Length: 276
View 1 (cartoon, rainbow, N blue to C red):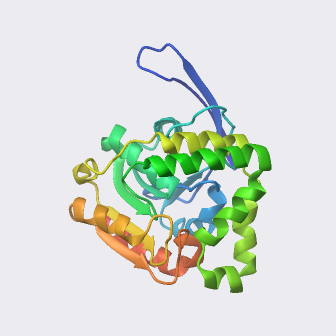
View 2 (spheres, rainbow, N blue to C red):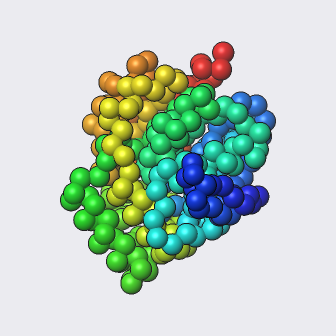
């Protein structure tokens, strides 16, 4: 694990300076791929993907602001903030172009990165995520979860989310995976979770933008995803020219964890084709 302290101007006028410390892993060599986790997880959710990728790729897995071992910021951390954090990290690592992979919230950050830094994107992998912004109902639900996180703690968030994240089969028969995911959630800072929830509620609607993504794109989604269902990925597949859609059977919202072999097979196949 390494840490990088970001210090950058938060706006073009330079009226404010952003400082934050990001934790990340940087393994392997070859074409670079960046892995962005979902909410309220951390970079360890990509363990199986890092192991599969690092033989042929340089793999950077990062804890987004407020999660894992990265610094917590109060208030609001927007998807743009996270995307700019990531660009600063990549610049520090000397990575000019990257395949960027994001799951759920990580997908929102990946889309923002593609929007702001299109020339830095070699390929895009969007897993169990969506292009559209929050509805008013979704924003209200996030506000409720903010209060729950801050006043009841992350155990309450985990207990409410787990049945929606995972399939009934996983909940019943894979206690070790359930506990692994629950631990990631309960060790997330409530303040960091709240800041990310506020940022997700404010994110842009990218439905009209995704058709302008020119980089090779892979869409992955669990067949049983309750949070960002298959229809969300099918929409992006229709809009992004030449994109590939892989539906992971028997998986819910964290398809990379529930079905890592299928997920990795699709990911490695996609990367091998674009790197020929």
